[in-house]
Length: 416
Ligand SMILES: *[C@@H]1O[C@H](CO)[C@@H](O)[C@H](O)[C@H]1NC(C)=O
Ligand SMILES: *[C@@H]1O[C@H](CO)[C@@H](O)[C@H](O)[C@H]1NC(C)=O
Ligand SMILES: *[C@@H]1O[C@H](CO)[C@@H](O)[C@H](O)[C@H]1NC(C)=O
Ligand SMILES: *[C@@H]1O[C@H](CO)[C@@H](O)[C@H](O)[C@H]1NC(C)=O
Ligand SMILES: *[C@@H]1O[C@H](CO)[C@@H](O)[C@H](O)[C@H]1NC(C)=O
Ligand SMILES: *[C@@H]1O[C@H](CO)[C@@H](O)[C@H](O)[C@H]1NC(C)=O
Ligand SMILES: *[C@@H]1O[C@H](CO)[C@@H](O)[C@H](O)[C@H]1NC(C)=O
Ligand SMILES: *[C@@H]1O[C@H](CO)[C@@H](O)[C@H](O)[C@H]1NC(C)=O
Ligand SMILES: *[C@@H]1O[C@H](CO)[C@@H](O)[C@H](O)[C@H]1NC(C)=O
Ligand SMILES: *[C@@H]1O[C@H](CO)[C@@H](O)[C@H](O)[C@H]1NC(C)=O
Ligand SMILES: *[C@@H]1O[C@H](CO)[C@@H](O)[C@H](O)[C@H]1NC(C)=O
Ligand SMILES: *[C@@H]1O[C@H](CO)[C@@H](O)[C@H](O)[C@H]1NC(C)=O
Image (cartoon, rainbow, N blue to C red; front, side, top):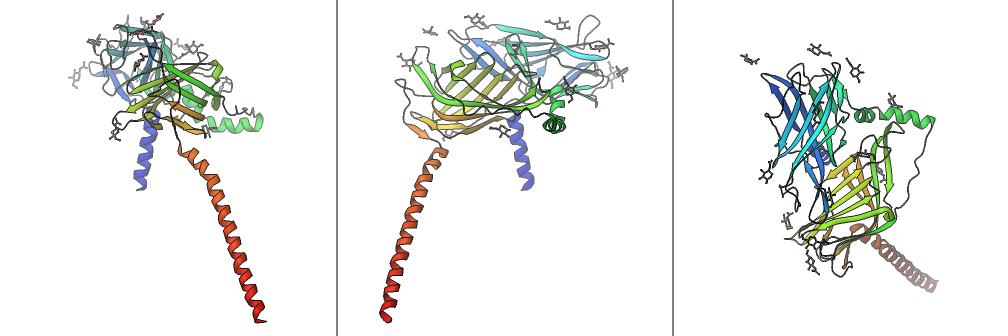
């Protein structure tokens, strides 16, 4: 029983960390020897144009990704080692390596995606195969060691972002398996050395972060292509993010309120899914995806994605979970929750909502339909009722006690 519980927790944690992405193992061989080996999870945020808007697709490197032996190579005197993984309908991820004898690094990162794949890029206006390259992504390790980075790290590649997590990787391998000695990335070092540093910093200088207070309530909406409003939302939003702070040189827990006046909303509405995208000053992008089950006529918040690129972050944070089940409501109704709700997304990011009302489907005449209230609000309404009932009960008991007392004393009087 205990073991199965622990296992279940482990699985939940695993899925929470990875969202939908799986750890994939990729190897490049020459003859009988392996020169590059990578175990990693990767996800991509790809922005593309539809006929009259832009959209962001979240793509994970699937389990079925394989090494493209045609373009991958262990390198020659004139060319660098290259690992190319292909997946889906003509998508590819490439890592090219270079070394100076004592260190090796990922020289550049290539992402290729096929916009004709309409299941991944619905309504894309182009059908091109797009290739984007970034150089010097900062993945490097000592030769004959394995580069290890369990923490998610996000890299901008062209206009897209690539996020690696649970990464173990080696190039210029001396043997056929990953070297036992590891070069650990900065983000992992900070999380393992965090307890001692926080202990010492609290005794020396404690720059107590001022809590931002309750966020202001914003009103957001999404319009259809024909200009009618198809999604309505009113809510106060607070991001609870843990990241490696450059200024404090450690991992910190940060609470950041979204400021409605600096936040733009956009999105899209389809028959069974609706997306609300909130962007604050180019540095914070928060996406909500709602899914409608047309059998049960119930909707829920099924995915949250956060892309945060704040000045104090050592790497941008991309956090995504596409298997959520929050804010459940019925088609034709809005969902309301005045009480604070904590929507856990990934371990490093949760979202706190305040005074929320949302309607992702069947919006007519720009107004919220009748609201279905969350359990917490109903419980809060119960409190006065319970208190009232308890007071009434107390009054009744006192009254009965008084009546009985009066009767007794009356009876006692008569016997004397
Ligand atoms: C690969 O291994 C086989 C048997 O282990 C050996 O006969 C062959 O020569 C090796 N090839 C190379 C290129 O090392
Ligand atoms: C999307 O459209 C905008 C203008 O409509 C254009 O500037 C941009 O290059 C397009 N992006 C892509 C990826 O095609
Ligand atoms: C892109 O996707 C389309 C449709 O899925 C497919 O026909 C085409 O072969 C793909 N292109 C490449 C380069 O794989
Ligand atoms: C390789 O590069 C690193 C960092 O740039 C440098 O510290 C090291 O001395 C270089 N090694 C050689 C053999 O050039
Ligand atoms: C990637 O880096 C390698 C090694 O530095 C270089 O040979 C190759 O041309 C680069 N590719 C691109 C597309 O920049
Ligand atoms: C984060 O912002 C910096 C500077 O504003 C930019 O150079 C970088 O590409 C951004 N990273 C991502 C992943 O968007
Ligand atoms: C890496 O290992 C190989 C084989 O064990 C050895 O020949 C080479 O000198 C090592 N390189 C470094 C930089 O330690
Ligand atoms: C958006 O595109 C559709 C066709 O795909 C068109 O009917 C509609 O007028 C366009 N809307 C705007 C605002 O350009
Ligand atoms: C606007 O488009 C939606 C579907 O995209 C449709 O249900 C609705 O009737 C349209 N409204 C008008 C006024 O054309
Ligand atoms: C923020 O998240 C951390 C870790 O999940 C949690 O301990 C903390 O209570 C949260 N703070 C708020 C205000 O939600
Ligand atoms: C950050 O902290 C690490 C160890 O905690 C230390 O080695 C490093 O020098 C520090 N860097 C800066 C810039 O303070
Ligand atoms: C939709 O709801 C029905 C009834 O509650 C359920 O059986 C079905 O699995 C749901 N479909 C999806 C895709 O969740």
